[in-house]
Length: 307
Image (cartoon, rainbow, N blue to C red):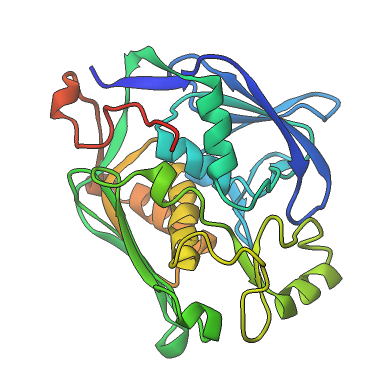
C-alpha cells in the first residue's frame, strides 16, 4: 500500500511575516491519518483550526490566504509547497500570528524543518485526485493574457512560463518543466526564492505590505539588475519560484494531484480558480489509492531525502 505520511516528531521555527513584518512562531506537529493539513491560530483567545481546502482560500493578493470565520493565515504557499514536495499528508501547523514566516524566501527552510522532524508512514492509503479530463482557466487578452491548465497524466508534472520585460529576468530561463517522477523537489525547486522590484516594494510598503521583506529573504531587482550580492541560486530561479508557488497553491486542494499542470503568467488567484474549476466538474476527476506502491506513478513511493 502507498501510505499516508506525517512527521515523527514536532519541530519549530521562528521568523517574520513577509508582509506584516510581525514575529511569528511556527510549530509543526504530527497528525493522525486522514486529518489533512490543518493550520491552527494558537494566539487567539480561543484557538481556531483552519483545515486546508480550495474553498478555504479567501484572498490571493500577493500570496495565498486561508480563513475560517474571521481567523486567517496569510502566505501559506511556501510551506504547502514543501509539504507537496515531500508528500506530507497529515500535519498540524500551530502559528502565533496571521502570517507564515518568510524565512529565506524559498521552501528550503521548510523542507529542512520537515526532514529534521522525520517523516513517518501511516496505516492508511494515500489518496490522490486523478485528473480525467483537461480543465483550463484564462484571463485577459493579448499582452495581459494568462492561463493555467490541468490535463490527465500518470504522475505529477508542472510546466510554467513567465513573461517579464526586465533585463535581469530576460537573461535567465523563463520556462521550466518539473516532473516529480524524474526530478528532485528538494534539489531542483525548493531553493528558489520569491522576488520583487524595488519600485514595487516602495509602493507595497506605503500600503502596509512587504514590511518584513529584504535581501535576506527575497531576490530584489532595481530597473536593471539583481541587487543581491550572492546572485541567483539557479540560472532560472524566477520561473522555478513560480513552480514552487504553484505546487503550494495546488496542494491546497487537500490531496496530491495526478495531473500535468501547465501555465503562462499564472499566479495565486488563477491557481485557486483552476482548483475550483476542476472541483466543479465531477466527471473531470476521481479519488484513487494504490494497494501496491509499485503500481503508483514514479516519484511518490520513495520517501524524499534532504539534498
